[in-house]
Image (cartoon, rainbow, N blue to C red):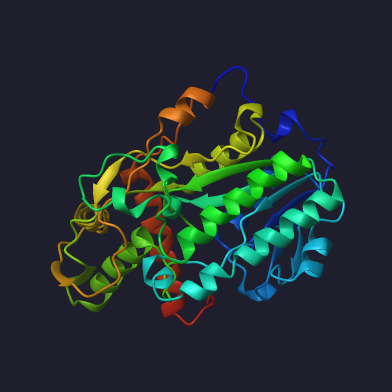
Length: 347
């Protein structure tokens, strides 16, 4: 880490108010725990899901159930806040975002109302979780893709629905900084994965879905796995611990005000390779059955980390094999609990 890098501990007092939206989900819930473990005592976690459905709840963290597509709820959420981390969105893996475009687009209401509420409340810093889906899809038509640098979002041709919402919300953040002086920070997430995330039900992303499928195959004795598409499509996957540290450093970097930046691993793998890693971790070899009419997204996507290395002297470092094993073991435990009729994450 560069000697000039700052984290939240360099900027806030331990009793300053931190607000995290989307905190009933994977990344938001993990971020609440991250700040709590650093000793911050006033953390407000907000999500529209009923509290029993939250993925994680950290003891000592205020938890509010609010629909942030409503302006009044946003004003309540940011009361007294020094910093706001907006991770609230209606989203999921490719199977969800390709078939729920209206729901994904409607998330622009959340960021619009949250920005205005944060500005009016005098919030010091505002973080927006964007996505690699904001990038021009015409640059992602080959599995041997050139890694995407930040400038590749324009000329704009984002992923339909979800990607356009993210790109437009980035612009909202930039204009609130330029015209109204609200300090905003923007990170484009590249496939964040890890324990405590969605692993079944239709919103899960590829690493969790594949781990679950391998576990199910082993448990059932039906030693085959369904792979969406040919499996030749490529992605990079960023482990949750790297994501949390990256959010912290990006939020507190003076050189990254209103400046979108990649937050992802540059370790590019095919889906077939990802399946092979999960099989290796599970100690099993499965027959592969390809579902060629499944939602696939772009052919290839990877994170160019030149900018984040130049500004922060850092990039996500957890090898996929290491992060996937931790994810697999956690899902394995969750699967056993679910099979035994016990409550599991997002059941």
